[in-house]
Length: 360
Image (cartoon, rainbow, N blue to C red; front, side, top):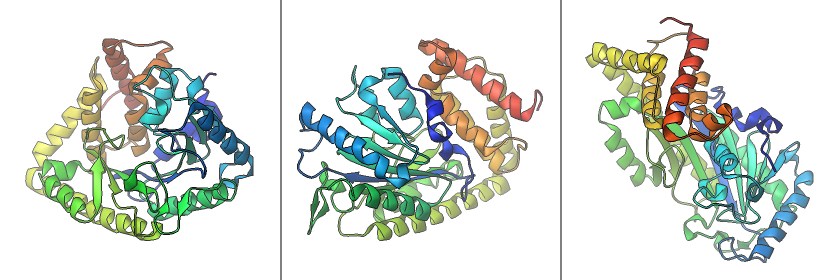
């Protein structure tokens, strides 16, 4: 089985289009629901035959789920490592489902992908329902994932307890099984050294933060994934409202920090951001970390109106397309680390030149 991204709605990257609210600061909003099929052991304990039966049950139900009309079903256990990494880099599957730390994917691992919606099959839980929206739109994401949940739940019996709610492999997900997250860019708070106070405040209000790829990933390029921690004893709507309210406050703090930077250290910030842009325009080799950090600077420069003629959409795409699996796909073969660094710099140069022109 080979992976043809053209078969996916918007190539599975519609969430990058920067059309949502506060898209200069917030890249995307995502909500996941953990669900398990009644009568089966959790995925980590399920035997191979059980996982395959779960996959078959979901496959048969998909044509009757309106939210997944026109979706594509991919068997990750039949894809190569490079193809699974490609899906992970686009935030379409988790690292665990992609099996990036194993030579082959887990038997029965699969994902159904529609326009902004998806269902991961045989991950930590039997099912992970996912919706991704561009920009900041928790309400729209919740509406879409709730609709998908109702439609799929009408076809597949979920493991549910009257007192505890939806039963999940990890106790911290029990209850709603919901993880709502916002991927946000906070360079102003980092540069003003206010980020520590903000992150401590998140913990006090029942939220947490992670890196670009969620749990287990490091914060890089000033990109933070803010999400709820609590799932038990609160409704999905209450959790979503809390996240939305707190993130709005964080966005406000970020804008205030940017104003302070420009007021108190304008020429220093201007020089720093133009240096980042110049490096990306002319560098011949870039590590992933370097690219993320310089792109963070350029994204801030666009937000401050220092650089015009460069869209947030292009910057969003660069975050994804200059990763290793995407570069290897573009080059048509596997790349060594040094080859990837050269290919990354070339891709970024070409993308910026195409939009901003050959000269600054």
